[in-house]
Length: 378
Ligand code: ZN
Ligand code: ZN
Ligand code: ZN
Image (cartoon, rainbow, N blue to C red):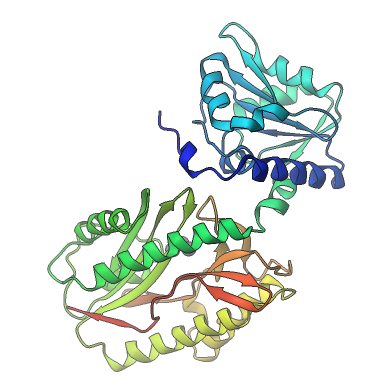
């Protein structure tokens, strides 16, 4: 099985030591006595490597008081030691043999703990076992505690997001310089995957190519449809570079766009720009969504914008904070998220523009820097 991120993409050990301390402090403020973190983006965030999630339990036990422990299958002990480097000085590595019960080892580290935070993507077979074994402990979601740290990107993380974004921009410029008509969506999608890698991504994650009436489906899966003159084509692409994600969308039109499409697109463009301009520390996330939605609603397309304006991005393509009406959390410097309003007219066409932005003390900074103008392609 592949190891998702390699030693080459790690930050300094002190970065992870600091994250462990801060996550622990966040747990303490929520009256959580220990966090249990299985392989996931959270695990990678805290330790700098990501072993495969599998049936053999790997679990970081992070008590508020006491030494962190890493319960790992014996056969992955060398990998863990190698991966975490000098961080291992502050973490007790607890290998388990094939005949051991690793859940008892986790329990042994908790010493009668009553409120335990579980990583939010932990497999239910682990959760159910822990619930039975740790009874009457209260098991809660660890993501508010870990997420409080993880959602605020440090400058070295923003540098990586910026590098990933510019690689995606390069791939977008390259695909929209090619002739699209006469090629199937699938074919163009495969080509984008190549271009994402050529532009410097380590992995190509997705390449939505939605043409003609398919462009009205925000998460269309590229198929056999052949792109032709008169099509709107929504291109939503992303990958990872040094473990951080890119995600950008542009809309192209094959040939000269009709006036009604061009007018609709201009509304979208104004909405996307307004949302970017509204970003500042202290502004609730919902206000960013409203800034885009208001312009689209006033132009009469309110029902045609059926998704939230954006999502946080980092080690995962979708993470906190979400830019949606239900989120009144104030933005802070270091939040990184997408601004991606769309307008979708069923059976006819659709358009979306997506940039990754970061909230700074001076306002929003776009990490994707390509023009947002409608791209006319052949
Ligand atoms: Zn999406
Ligand atoms: Zn996207
Ligand atoms: Zn997105």
